[in-house]
Length: 263
Image 1 (cartoon, rainbow, N blue to C red):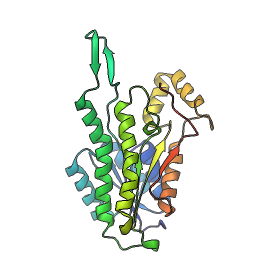
Image 2: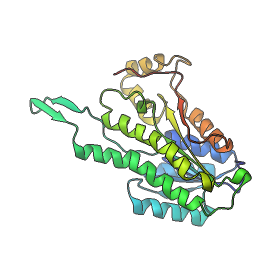
Image 3: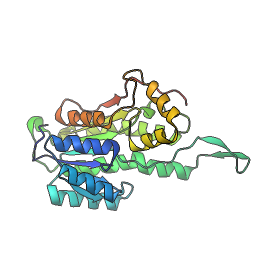
Image 4: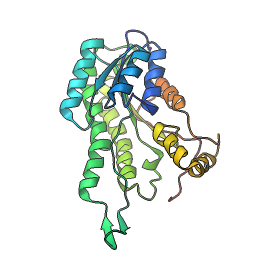
């Protein structure tokens, strides 16, 4: 897909981290970008920086997401690109010892449902609503109408201790990609996912401030280059996935060749 000033993109989680880097990369290529996020102050600042629009959106709310798309489309027109980075989840082991009670507890069904709504269901919600809008667009070269990029994780393939929900639900995000790409192939809408490894996002940088030794250990665990990923490297891949129309139905690792151990 050729990206220029007529191209509209929606980026969830665009106020910081991987989403912000994606929004910046797309805007630098000429696209008009709408930022969907809960953080209004940061979201407005990023939108101003990239010359786009901010929409306060809770990705776990169908009503919020529909309203966000309506506002974005009123301002910029129908998006051809969706990049979904936002997520909400709760960590925990399937069964763990609870010091407070002196007994064992399980990761509750309610916690799992909360995480499912914030990862897997939100991914389907964002992708399907974007695709519904993209279906109305005039086709470009090769009949292409749009490009959807979801964010999974290396935990989708190597979920660690305490990632029963996160790992399985990110695997579910990967599982959406091929059937959705096939569902949408006659409409010319492509679907891919990116599986980032350990990246220098705000939560990870905060961990580094609290525990420098853990942070340094994570960096050293990456085969090459021996550092955390840079958000702009994620943004670069997002841009390439949009530009290169032969990427479709793919789950792509972006991880410096790391393979996560159990802990």
